[in-house]
Image (cartoon, rainbow over all chains, first blue to last red):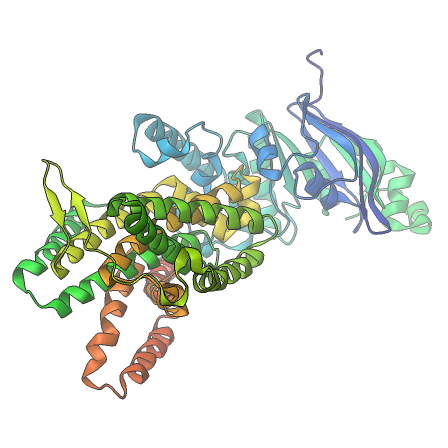
Length: 266
Length: 324
């Protein structure tokens, strides 16, 4: 294939819960180096897509590939090792571990050091751990948590935990990071902080797929936005087109108000 | 480990090895054997429960399997004690892998239930498979074992001090193995699996393989110590699977603080001696023991290790460092 092959290809993804089709034949792509937004009203299937693509829920149909490599049906840890990491809507951290340990543990499965080498205190292990520590400290500075490197994660505020989760998602140098609602429930100052972090990471070459409720956040951050409604993709394009797309407005506002307004809504 | 702590540990181990030279008191030696044995059992349980987050009632089953295997191989096949105990440990580890692999694919809770059923099943098998285990009477009168030492010497374990040295020596090796694992990044991954399994998975950690590693290592150590311990008792019978062992291990881990190596080791030392130290009042002995346990849970709800962890948290929560 040519160099234009998308980094992530999702083809016909389908997920049903009993009679309900939560995700209905969704197809989309994420190009290398982009920040793509995935939005939609409550229950439109955004989080289900993240869970399926990252291996946390089995899909009922469809395929997905990362850089041409089949990920369909792999368990979550294999998908992560293949280069697709994710964060969680309910922020997760290892509370008892320090921030630096939180990050170092996130890199250890991808540095090629085996179990026996992990028990010995050999040079290969030391090299891997030293570079993980350096990267961990770098990422902590990027997200502005460097001063807490040695503190247990339990002391962090909610927004700080979101930042730690983003940093942890970057540790293993993934090809693609999927952020599941990175700014939900976060105050405006912290939202700007997270936005900067995303910009900076993207500038460093990280590709991101961001699932969000906060439409303004996505519209200002992403140059391409995918919109879901009731498990189906209803729009896919730059924010300017999405804002004026009648189907999107109808999905968010209902038919009547969409006609009155005609622009984005939070 | 800092140099100072390393020195303290070396001194402590040396002091324990010097005990038989200082006192021939068999009672003191019996306490030492009890500490060594329970220390290995609770250390293994701590690895599985404290570090990896799997509540396991199976440890006593591994302990007894090791005991029966070593007793049978030595008495009926003429194996040496060391080979018999090692075989017991390996068999226990394999059994641990089987029950772990089969139940953990469902859930942690499934593992807890299966491990409990397994321990109960062990006792029934030991009692009813008479042709192998000789049933409820067990295998009494285990012979005095001997071990080959380097330099062509043979060590006959005929005195209580000999078993004290054997079990203490094995305990030091076993604790060192546990320490090595929990302080390595394998231990870090186990804690990650315990603290937040989905997050660990999202970072490429395969929870099942770390859980199986913890189970297999703890079963190996429990099985081996069981193999040595039955020769100290000179008998193995179905009571080796008694719930008493499970209860004692659990208390040691909970009081010491699940996930705290030194906490659990210290609690094992104190609690191995406590029921005997309270012997001055035979009537109230177990009542006092219970009172001490309740007091410990009130003062240290997360165990000694949990208390230390909370102090660490407090230091970081000083106002000057409050989150912006």
